[in-house]
Length: 260
Length: 310
Image (cartoon, rainbow over the protein chains, first blue to last red):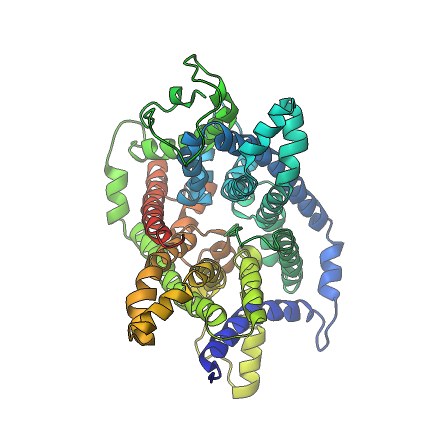
């Protein structure tokens, strides 16, 4: 005989409240721009602002560049460590954990102090911003690529390809990458979600991006910021939904925590 | 292969790493270019992670005009506004870590073992994955729309109880308000990490406990809790660090009402508000120090937790 799990339902309902009340409130708030009725006026105003498009466009651009660089840094390294240099694994893992030890504000502080003056000046170009985003994405990119590599026994695949006479280009292009597709895509989605919502780096380095834009209109107007927040939530939600859809069937590997 | 050339201090030739078969080709003791494959990664890490950290460390001990000093470090512990910033950051982190751990654990328990239908579990896990990423500026605005002066919950309470909670002295722009906001990304992270750990509690252990005459209390006290405790504590520590390094959410939510360490460092970047670059470095160093301790604690507890995962 089973009791009705009252206790569990109670916590579940509390959890659902915590999840949904702020979301519902934001949506409701964004619809209240005109007195007395619900309209999409705030969204219309948001879409009228040309800076909405430019900042969103910049964030897209930063996200794409970050994804490319992060992939180029992480994939060869993770592959090589798995295949040839397993003794380096702890060191690589240490590096990928560093972003947790050095918070974004502190990292940007160090980067500005170090690369704001000769011999190497990066803060006058978006390079410092991209560097920050790549660092931020490292843990997530590495973890998802590494999990992908572990799952397919990359060593056997590589050796099999080699014994069939494949050269390195063929091995990478036709053997490794197709097997890593899901891992790479989830790493990219995650990087995308992180960069699109990021505020700290862009604000402190004064580059246009979506996060600082939302913050800025927040201090100028009411209702529109909530409308833009809803859109920002949608971007995050779609990215994560993409990852979860890709990772369906696989054990829940991807752990997330983005721009705080 | 010739891995042995690379990390001399760690490698003894007889060491067997992770059960791999020995390399097919015979040992070649020549200098190898194998490490070149990982060189860009480590170069990037050295340039953009280690050097900035080292520079923060070095400059924390620099006088205004140059030269060595311990004054900046001493100032962190003696200047009242810096101390209060650290105290506030530590308090918010501790409260939301404990609260998030507690609530997240109960939620994870409810959906994993609590006898709820299966959809509750998959829904809760999926949504936790999303919610742990809802942070930063939009999250701050979401809570303004919820509990702010014109927020939905504020108006609902006003409608039911006929009192304006904000006139009664309630505000979300303080320590507790910020904690409520942080909790939104804290407890989902706990759910995400706790759920697999709870799934790892095997039926056999419970049955063995029952066969030996144990009750539910005995199972939790002597079997489940000792196994789960490292994960539980480790995740609580992770949540602590998660809140401690947060900047965007706090900045968008409170502006500069709340004196958090990250906010002060951010202000220091935008203009030397402390009137002493060395002191800014020292504050950043303090953050790195605290985060290092939390991550070491997390790593140690995770290693203990891993004993039961196979």
